Amino acid sequence: MIDLAFVSLDDDERQLSRFLEAQPKAGLRTSYWLPEGPSRDTWIGALGVTNAGNLPVHALVNPSGQVACLIQGAVEESDYAAIADIVGAKR
Image 1 (cartoon, rainbow, N blue to C red):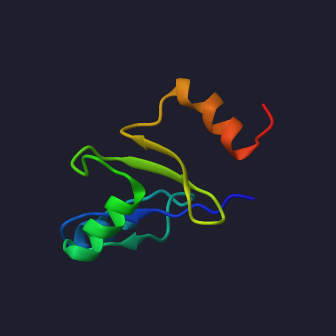
Image 2 (cartoon, one colour):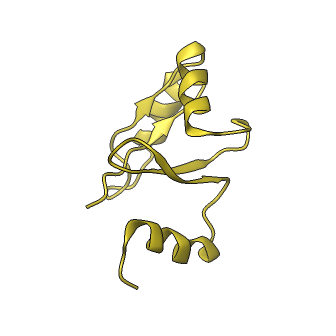
């Protein structure tokens, strides 16, 4: 089983609200929001993100809290095989 969480780094929480309101019926309904500041910086650093300005960032975190895979930028078709191997998905 995989738990999926969306974390917004929008500068203003209203940006996140507008994004969620614009989602289609089957789209994203909830998100965490990390406001700018030391907590956000610490969280981003703990993931191993080297350039938070290069969004999106995708992180696969195992049950013990260790980052198993970090992709800075878009997930491309060529990334799916490696991700499937990490999560043990059948292809």
